[in-house]
Amino acid sequence: MSKINIKSTINSFSTLGTQLTQPDAQLMAIINDEQYHNAWFTPESVLQAVTAIGKMLNEADLQTWLTRYKLDGATRDKKVGLILAGNIPLVGFHDVLCVLASGNQALIKASSQDARLIKAVLQKLITIDDSFADKFSFVERLADFDAIIATGSNNSSRYFDYYFGKVPNIIRKNRNSVAMLTGDETTEELSALGHDIFDYYGLGCRNVSKLLVPKDYNFNFFFESIEHYKTIIHHHKYNNNYDYNKSIYLVNSVKHLDNGFLMVTEYERLASPLSVVYFSYYDDLASAQKTLQDQSENIQCIVSNKSINVPNQVVPFGQSQQPALWDYADGIDTMEFLANL
Image 1 (tube, helix red, strand yellow):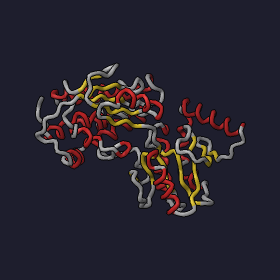
Image 2 (image 1 turned 180 degrees about the vertical axis):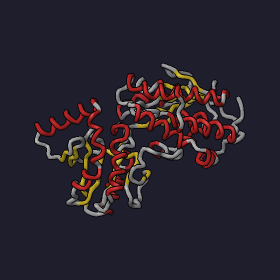
Image 3 (image 1 turned 90 degrees about the vertical axis):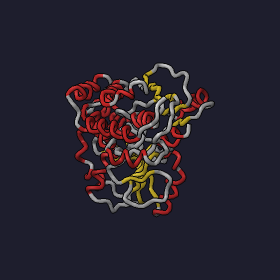
Image 4 (image 1 turned 60 degrees about the vertical axis):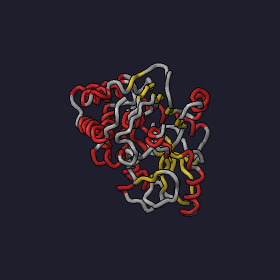
């Protein structure tokens, strides 16, 4: 059991960050091959995820983040089981990072959808600093753990509660992200919103699946501003979802707007099917804010250019898929949890 050296930890992960922002030939080969294991993981999407994590692991942010916690010189060696999601590339990396940076051991149950990339990234970390070699392991079945961090659906969370409820845990359920529009947005802001909707094909919990719009909102300007994302329809799985949902709306005479690659329809739920974004009208900003407050436990982040008094993270247009180190999933401070085991 060794003492945590914050300076060494920062150096190791910042070096990893540099390598991820400039992938070498070996990593690029893995990035390009992911599409053959998971059709959603196109080279463009995987490269975006890898470089986003690389930028996140910059020395300044690591310093700001890790010095918030009483880690330096501490001795900590708990075994933390991690059940990772696999909806977008490297989605579970932050949990692994938190366990390793806190001095604990990670028992990683990777998703079959995203098992190769996380292993490749951690192998790079070992090459940088071999002291991490015995700090993590990949397992098919979790056993002999002191704590659990599990990410899944509302349905799987019930099983997680049953099996892991007797140990310290963070169990995450379904969440979705929302954009609040006022009608005063610029072309540039709505274009950036396209990233919040379409990055990773809309598969992430930080992807916008619901819009709050003022009464009589005109969607024409919105559609014009996101027109350059139209090539998304060429992805066969996205196109299949679009065709399926469009046929359902047409057969059932569901009122909707359609620009050829995205449909919007009025519906109160937050979670929309792929290729569809739901919207709801609001009377004024106060009522919109109350709606967001009432739904806060189901919202991951909110995209808006307005200051909103809500417990959720509010991000500018285009920034939902670029979280900082301290932007924790579900607003639960993972490092605080781990530091107090």
